[in-house]
Structure formats: C-alpha cells, structure tokens
Length: 493
Image (cartoon, rainbow, N blue to C red; front, top):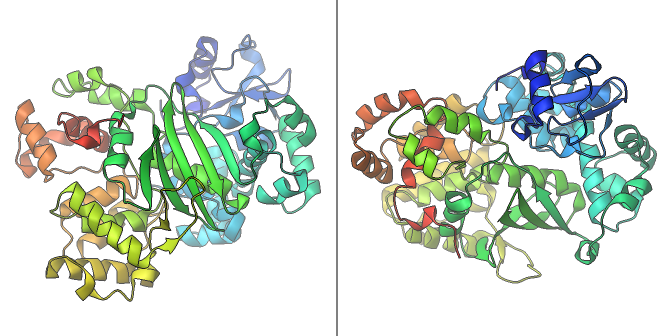
C-alpha cells in the first residue's frame, strides 16, 4: 500500500472484488450507477469495473456528490495510515483537522500552525485528497453528527451544535446529502440500547485494521498509569481527558474486531477531538500488515512478529503531559515514575468528578506547573532543573508539542534542553509526537533484548543494524520490549 493508491485503478478493483478490509481507509469506491460510495470491504456484490471510480477520502466522495453506503458505512472506516507515518505538510494538516483545528480556528488558523498560506494549504490538500480543509472538516462533522444521532437521545438541535454545525438547517442539509436520510431517519434505523440514553455518556466502537495485539498496548498504559488520572478497571483502561471545551473521562477495552469506547464528556462539542485522541493513543490507524510485513524481512525479528503480530505503539492523548512524565521517568523504575507524577497531579492537577469513582484529576498543564517550587520535588537537583526548564519552554510556547510538530525539528529542540539525552528525546518522539521511526538504542530493555537475540547491543552498532527496519523502528521497539516479562508487555487480568 502506498501514497496515492486511489490512482492505481487495477489494484483498487482487485481490492474491491476481494473485499479486503486491509484497504479500508486507504481509498473509497464511488459507484457511478448508484451514486453511493463504499469502503473496499463492502459486503454487497461488487459493481462492474467501468462503474467504479476511486477517491482518496470520504470528503472527496461527498464533494463529488456521492452518498455514504448504508451497508458498509464508509465514513466509519479507520483513518488512513498515511497521516501516521508521514511528517510533511499534508499529513500534519490532516492530523490537525482530525483534532478539530478547522472547526475552532478556521482555515487561517490551520495555515498559521503549518506555516503556510491558506492558498498553499488548500492547494496541497486538494491535490492529494481531492478535497480542501473545509470539506474535510465538514465530513468529520457529518460523522460526529451520525454518532450522536445513533447513540444518544439528544434533541437534533443540540446535536447540530455539538457536532460543530453553525445552524440546524446546515446540519439537516448535510446529513441528508451525505447519508441520503434525514436525521430522524438515521435515528430510526439505529439499534437502541438503554445505557445510550445518559446525556454526556456515549458508547462507541473504534474500528482498526487487523491484526491488533492488545498485550503491550494496554499493558503499557496500565503499568504506567498515574493514580488519579489513569486506572485499569474491569478489563478497561480509564483516564481523564483535557479537551478544548471541557474535560472528559474515557474507558477503552479491547474487543474482537474493535475497541469498546465509553466516553463521558462535560461538553459534547469535544466528541470528535476525544475520539481522535483515543484513536491516536491506541495507534488504531496503523497498517499492521505493512509494518509486520517489513519487519518480517529480518530473520531475527520474524519469529517475534509471527508469534504475536499486530503490535501497536502506545502513544498519548497529550504530548506536553507525556514529555513531563518522560522526564520524571528518567533513570527510575516505572513505580517511582508513577509516584512522582501522582504527587504533581495531587498538588497541581485540576479536580474532576468521576461518576464511577477512581479518577480524580486532570494532569496539570505546563501553565499550572510554571510556578512550581523545585525544592518541593523529591528529585535529584539536575532532574529538577530539567523538569522546570521543560515546563517553562512548554508554558512560554518556545517548545510546541502536538500533532502538528515537525519531528526532526522538535527532536533537535528537545536535545538542546539541559538534561535531555537521546533516550528522552526519542521516547517523546515515539509516543508523544507519533514518529513511527523513532528508535531507542540506549534503552536498557532494548539492549538486553538485542543481546539475547544475538543482535549488537552497543547503541551505535544496534542503530546501524536497525537501519533495515526503517521506517518502522518504533514498532520494532515494541517487539523487542515484548521479549521481556515486564508488566508493560502483559494485558492485565
């Protein structure tokens, strides 16, 4: 699979005829004779090849006048993996659009974050995705509206504004245009469940490309959970979320074929951003077939991949939070890092109410930590300096961390801070920035795994050996870590 796959008509036709779910989200099939668009794995009988045209995004299909298929629901496909492993302007723009920037700041705000003019951004997105930023944001609003219509009993007017529409009329017109049904018609078709009727509480299914191995993914999140902010309970990872309009609490649990997601939001306008961040946290838009296929070409990694394919990179819902926690975790155990973080949370975090109990705070913002007295930290003096310098850079805006970060530039800025070595910069690049090629050759667990597998164990030699794993070295890290019996590799019971 590769960039611009929708232009390879012959390959797309083969994928549609084989109903291959691996291609869902890579491209969309628009059927000229019916006026609908589908995901490649749609269960209906495939149309004739001459009646199919292919688009790179749901927004492009909608802009071309096609409606979403009621059977395969193409608007709910996993996102394209392109936006996860690329660092160019288009990929950064897509990550920002998914995070709701166009709805909150408009196209000028998007362009300013990227450092381009609005015309340049629109031209690049149109060339690659067949739709501009407004159309892409509109497609996301339509999907948010559908989720709220089908999973809540909210009045349609409330749903319209929660989904980001400027008026009820625009909401009604968009839903009819995209789904060929009125909002009430969509609700009538949806299966109803009693627990969906609680205002502010939503139960959703987050799709992903198979295979997905949950062991290291949820094991890592549970083993490093900061008390008050995160917990593992009843087979689900739960945590608090700081969101643009308010806060939320999410419970995420692995299920066959999907991730069960339970969201409680203080403001429903945060729904699309919350979903986006949860998907990013669990790396759900990854293409495991491409990743594992590449890593299997190495005879040392092949048995590890074959034993437990589909490992994801556990990421984060807040890049600044993770950077602070990475510094707290320098040269200490997982338990000690959790203790240090919990103290910060208790002293400086914002209290929240958890209807189910267990979670008590949002992780403190850099602004809240800016006035921190270093003397109150039970840390070595050098690490206090590292932490306060990082917090100051984050609070002042000198170190922007987010979905739009330029990976090489941000890594260089991190390394320029006192107390930041390659391990800290690379673990932030891997888990907070989402760089799929970040590598940790100085990590003790990686060096131990390398030694046991007969790989070079010195950082320089291991880095040279790992060149063959590019651009997926962050996933190789997961397979190497998994050779150990550390709790981060074990799905909690």
